Length: 530
Image (cartoon, rainbow, N blue to C red; front, side, top):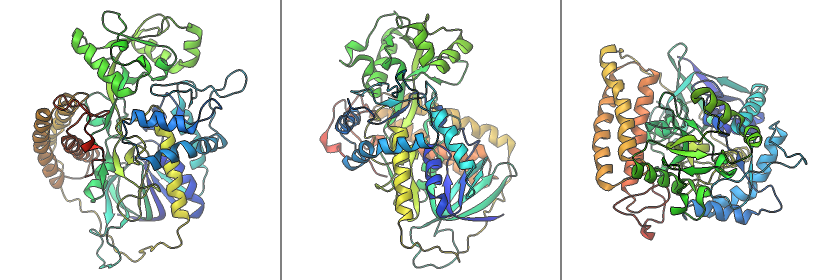
């Protein structure tokens, strides 16, 4: 086992982790951990774009109001002020770093309009915005001499005062780094750092149908919870209304920008239906559109609805959405300019996460969080489209500034961190049984903790999840460390946090809709903190 020291440990290689690493690297060595390849993350999958006030026709107050309406009042005012006031500056910084956003023929940025936005304020690079941002940041990170990148490395657990052998009076509730599994040689190394940034992305893979990549298993949130860090608002799981219905392949996101471009939702009978649910029609916030689609599917006994782009200019559609056009044609032989696209909601984004303050600090000293892993208060009960990349940039920047402006940080250089004990043996026969728990858990979450919920269903989900958790935790303690076991352990932790949070909110608000409590209740006008 190696002890690898640095001033900064960054876990995660999306926009939150990479931008933070770039901001602090000049002041000290950065070790950046990523579970797979650097570009295997939610950022690179983002199609729609990044939202900020970049037009004279728009204003910060309008952006703030739209975000608060989408978040059904639960957004934090100070976080929204940071979002709307600092967003344009952070985006200009991206542009300086080499990100090329799509422009109109007159040289102005081509701003799109998405659900919940009252103005066009979404910058994009065709329909592959995240990929453009990710590749630009990766290029800068790889060229920085102070940043070391460790791919195929799995963060197991945070290192706190409970692990260190020294009797340090001043080391209460402090993070010293993390135990990291090198998946290429199966060694567990100690990554010791003065500051640790958790930017591990989301956790929507806990659901049966999701737009998230396979790496998004909630590792950062689960690690933080096990270390006693505060977690907030995990009941608010955003289901993207339109994932491509393709039972033979992983769900593929059909960007909200298609509806912003003029696409119409139609039920199995080919009839438009959004007028029955919201006056904003296809541009209503995601929670409303997802529930409308769910209702139409149940009403008609169908497995999907349609998104119809056929009335729009075909050349413009192909130009604006080349990746989506190609995917639909290659996988399902669908020409989206001539054929309607079958779509279905899929778990997409967690609006809660590790609770932070305005500088990215968690409830543990020297531990920071940013991006989808964090709960900053921006999203409230429902995330406004394309606010997530902006939020990640802003709060990673704020965390970096907070650390760089510190006068002193106790380094704890002399602490003694014990090696990871991994004496168990893999039992292939038992693992065959245990791995079935993953699909069972995903089914439980989809059936009972999905778009529509109820108290009886949530309690049933909690009982069954608790049984699975006990089985998996027992297996984890007896066997050798291995990626699938670690992910399954984190899955059950995330499921537990979502269910427990949902059971504490006896109302319907945003993404949390309860059939037995269908109205908002001001008694629950607060964050759910675990």
